[in-house]
Image (cartoon, rainbow, N blue to C red; front, side):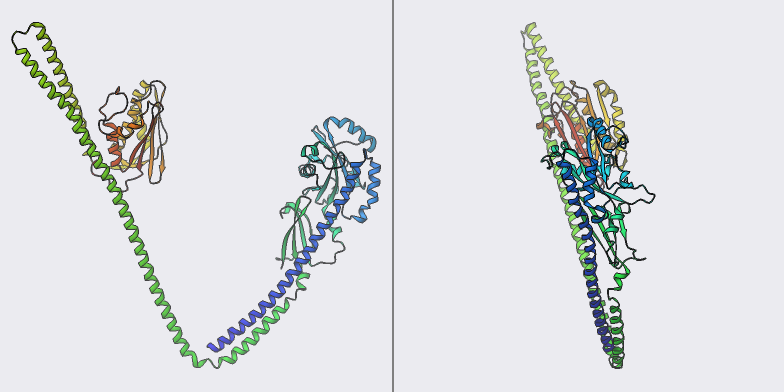
Amino acid sequence: MAAPLLVLVIGLLCTTAATFQADRAIDAKDAVRFEYAAQQKLDAIRDRVENHRALLRGAAGLFATLPEVSRAQFAAYVARLRIPEVFPGVQGIGFSRRIPAEDLPAALAAARQDLGPDFAIRPPGPRAEYHTILFLEPQDRRNQAAIGYDMFTEPTRRAAMERARDTGRVAASGKVELVQEIDPVKQPGFLIYVPVYEGGDVPDTLEERRSRLLGFVYSPYRATDLFTALFRDDPDSELAFEVYDGDPEPANLLHSQGRRHAGPPSRSATMTVPIFGRPWTVKFYALPAFDRGSGRQLVSVIAIGGLVATLLLAGLAWSQAQATQAAVAAREDFRRLNARLEETVAERTRELEEAQARLLASNERLEAAVRERTAELRESNEEIQRYAYIVSHDLRAPLVNVMGFTSELEAIKGDLLKAGLDEAARARAAAEFDESIAFIKAATTKMDSLIGAILKISREGRRSFRPEPLDMTALVQGLADALRHQADAAGATILIEPLPPIEADRLAVEQVFSNLLDNAVKYLDPARPGVIKVTGRPEGTRIRYEVRDNGRGIPAQDHARVFELFRRSGPQDRPGEGIGLAHVKALVRSLGGRIDLESEPGVGTCFIVMLPKAPSRPLSETL
């Protein structure tokens, strides 16, 4: 089947290529023809509107050079321009004068002398300045309806007038409905303004342009009349077009000309042309007359002729295909076998790569866990060494006192036994004896307190942890309520914001925050009202809780020592053994978190407790 298929494929390819080339050539020709026709219409629109610039500037020169222009003078000037014959589609040329509010009575009196006693400015109402239409020629019934209208009161017209005033250039308005539209069927319209300044020239600064403005020479346009007159003598009926003021939306349509296809047109284009500061969008569509002149029927002739010739040649080659069928079938079987083998190899390679990636990820997690556990063990070892040092040092000091004062007692006893002591000597010896006994009792009491603190931590350390979901807002609020009496006595306020929940051992968490709240109340600054605030927010897989107060603060050199056993900061004017924060730190570490502090003397202290949202691994059986 190779020969007939080859002939068929080559024939089809040649037919397709010839058809494609013919279609491409005709399409390129049509594209050039369409673009040329569209550009001609676009140039005609732009040139026609641009030609009116000189018309308006000439009228502006009339008002800039003469001190006063009467209606008769303006009418004679416009009549010489022969607007209907030379500029078809222009509704007329007019002049609107700028009248400050303080000059309104005098301006109205002068206008009524020239225009008649019935002249009035509309719409009525007080405003800072008026821009009423005084002249509009030729004086047909439509233009008469516009005399006296203040165009500055309508936003679209005002925007164009302000742009012309501030720039000193010609400015076109957006789409409006002209006051000349007095018939039931109304056309879209727009206006073009030229500013007129005192002295005739354009002032250099914006302030001068605004203060020296006399008014505007302008032309109103009925869009349908303008474009109908523009293309009245154009025999080209191959393109339809739509003109929009701004974006091509139905509300912005100024004019459409030509009937489009019932379905999508064969060609279309959208072009933009600037008209005195306004972007006009013109959309062009190909009409049936354009398609008929394209010669596209030649493409069908080439396609059908090539297909018939290809089928004839393929039929002739069919007789030569039978001898090669077996070889072609064997080759196809081999190709399929080879493809399956490649797929199998690729699949196995992919599986091996995925297994290797999983192994690498597992190794990385294991190494991270080992590093984390090593750091925890190192910190625990360092803390044990600190505890050993503290215990040996703090327990040895009372023992030294006991031993020393025991020797004192022996000496006093010897003195008491000596004969010949008078009563005063015996009294002194008895006082020294009592003092030594008091020191021994104090030392033993200190030792008992230290041993009791060590036993308390030891008993807490043998407790099992049981994680459970905790409503932290309710938990901390309960602890704050338990401290309410001490807080009220200290004149303090405890504020609990909504706290994120966690899963942890309830008793351990209660001990952590109970110690922190108790310390915050205990070490408030009596010089100002106490405020204690508890907040929390998520940070990755952990929750950051803060217990902040405005108490007396902790010096920077004591930030690390306050977490050591039996160590306290500042004046020792509050009861305690110095084990609370050491116990808190041990609890937080056993919960898988950490504790830090930020503090400044005279400002306050903030304890930061970072706890996991849930245990990442089973908690230790004990602390």
